[in-house]
Image (cartoon, rainbow, N blue to C red):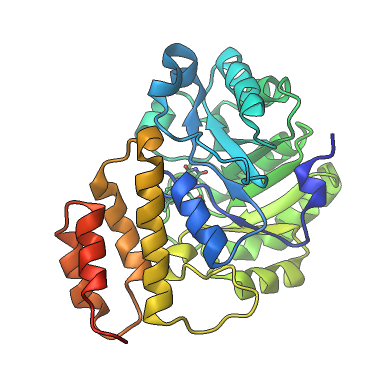
Length: 317
Ligand SMILES: Cc1cc2nc3c(=O)[nH]c(=O)nc-3n(C[C@H](O)[C@H](O)[C@H](O)COP(=O)(O)O)c2cc1C
């Protein structure tokens, strides 16, 4: 079987995995707005799934058959659970497994996963090995280090020696959270390390990249294989657009309408409370006259129908 990674264009532009954001609903909205080359699910805990099954992971692994460029992002420190969930992901139709080794949340750290892997490199290697038993290509997403930026060389050398298909680096330490600018100045040195240790492993960088043009600029300047964009999508749902242009209010509200329809369609599977939709209102209701008061109104709604009624009652543009 050919790996998805070899089929992607260069540079690879990926939408970053984001908890409570990059679910089946939002991925379809972005596919409609301006698609990236590659998607990742929200991170999903292997140990929780192995113990309690699908109810432990909510709708995190819900995917549709048209989602052929979707990688399951998993986390956890139990190799048996990781192997089982990775095999399950293959059965679900995922084309790759990405392992989260950078999440700074206390719950992930306590469970021995996320950024805690940086402090337990031997466990990280076991987890990669376990995920590979699925037969799917395995990639890793991590940070520069746990506490100090200069941990990057030792940590990334270790990970690059694990024969993974791709490595994405969020250019901050765990300790830095997202509070300081991403360390773009390290990209050339990290690229040299990759070239030296594992030239066949694709290198993606992540952190503070706004949109496609910005990502392509970085890739052209540094020679990395890809760039992952996370929060840029909150400021511009068309961040992956090939030929950027201004989008009208009705275009933006049509995306919101799609988000509402898909939310309803998948609700049985995802079971996400209505209020989880509210963070998305800000993505679509912006950059047009009256956006701020419309947003306020929408924040007080209680159902998708209430939102639709407000949108339908807007005066013509
Ligand atoms: C709301 C939110 C949820 C996130 N959830 C995940 C996740 O599930 N897995 C992961 O690897 N990173 C997660 N991240 C980190 C992003 O993937 C990305 O590494 C980080 O936001 C930096 O990139 P950016 O500056 O392009 O946003 C999350 C970030 C945000 C803002």
